[in-house]
Picture (cartoon, one colour):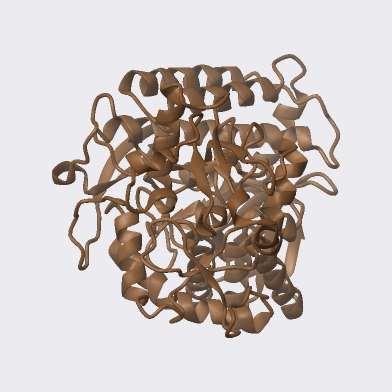
Length: 560
């Protein structure tokens, strides 16, 4: 017999924990499922800050925040979703503060806010350059305070849908071994992004798109999967994130000729242009021979040691440990790296998917608050605002739904599949397939895209899928079997990469993170003010489209 709850949240980063707190506070029996300890979730790696119009800047308000977000999204963001995010942001930040989040302060004692790229005012609240680390610990304290049960080191693998309703999930118990079923009236996916699709990424090894892939398997559409954001400042060669907060504090980007090259790409905003604009500028400089060993340089030296130690101490430590560079004395080598998936599980404004009882929030979801390009600082804000909303909605729905239980047949079928994988003795280890997928995605579906490269990547993915059918897990044990879970994660990554191909090929324009400068260099509002929607039907992927929801801001020129 499976364990039974009202609301089950899969993923225990900022979005998942905020959803669980909201559901609990509505009176629901709530549990979290996480393949790692909650405070090890990738949300803790977010550095620069969280966006909200707090009233510190006279020129800022929620409407200005919303417009900046719409423009930053290259007009692909759904404007009703953006308005919800920007309207609710301030209250959500103050709630985090009241729970104990220690934000940096300005001279008057108010929450300090720094400028971030493509923002019309300084609105990024921050805790030095470890904001995500602070928030994830504050949320975990609230989870523990409420006594919310956590299935820790449970690897969620298959959603269970019976008679059109999601009734729970099948997991592998990493600690004790074995297939486990957990039943719930409603389920929230909050498993984060899929940056491990790429060889150069800021994402943790755990970011394998589990929730997106599980939703795809049960018929839910994945929206805007072509929109993978490349962060312009990832540490070379590791891909470790160097926060946008550096540029917010005034750092420069230099090419091999010591020029601030952004004067040629974004003359007004310079280093505070949007991430897609800067990533393309960097890649162009590198491609045209003005890079340094495939990098450009991030120069903080003029900020001075005191300011770097006070506001960017985490960045300094990362640079010294992983690159042997002290930014007080020398510039940091950086390059664009895969960072954030604007696409994900299609949801409404309360996180509900097309399957009854199934919700999603955070980077795993696509309510489309980011469109074709996310502004720095909006991701942490989305985890909190839409995590809270999905938790409330799932709890409200659970009160009206009858009890649900995963059938023994569903659990047994999952056990047969896992046993077959473990029993296989001849074949290929997963890591070779995973490495080839990541390298070829970087080469063929990176900062710049071309149709033939994307089509070739589709062919590569299908060959990798065939090889995956013969994959072998060397570790035959039941406890702490990371070989097994990494093999299962690889299947998720292959499925998601396959979804990105038809979406990318079908969008014959350049918009935000989807740049096709050689065949379709211009944005095409007449034909592509719409979202790609990829579903899996009878084992085959199908591409459909959905209109962008416009409330008050028609498409305009996007310059910085």
